[in-house]
Image 1 (cartoon, rainbow, N blue to C red):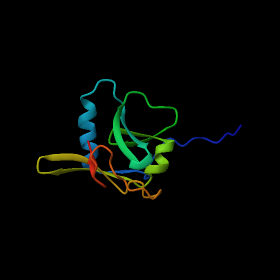
Image 2 (image 1 turned 90 degrees about the vertical axis):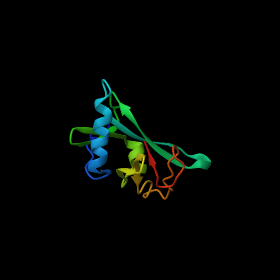
Image 3 (image 1 turned 180 degrees about the horizontal axis):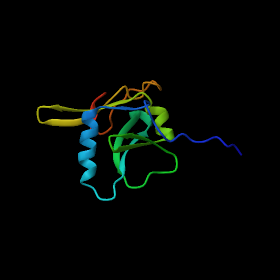
Length: 125
């Protein structure tokens, strides 16, 4: 058995803009029992990897957390290996508002295509 501690606190592995934090806080305040937001990675196959966000009521045992202005952003250890270096922003262009993930999969050589919106480097939300 190893006595190695699992580091659950994120610092600069994932960057989140102030605008994105404010939007996430506004969204989570409307939900009961939500403790934060999870960033996840899914897929593979012909469409490649995709990413998304969902509300979290209870963090998992292998979650890392980025605490920012009272907002908890959770990423499990496996997803973090794909998302390290990502920058999350919130953009408004005319009537369109979305979370934008920049530099997605930079460490693994992927494209960062968002499965929910179908545009490389585009936003989900």
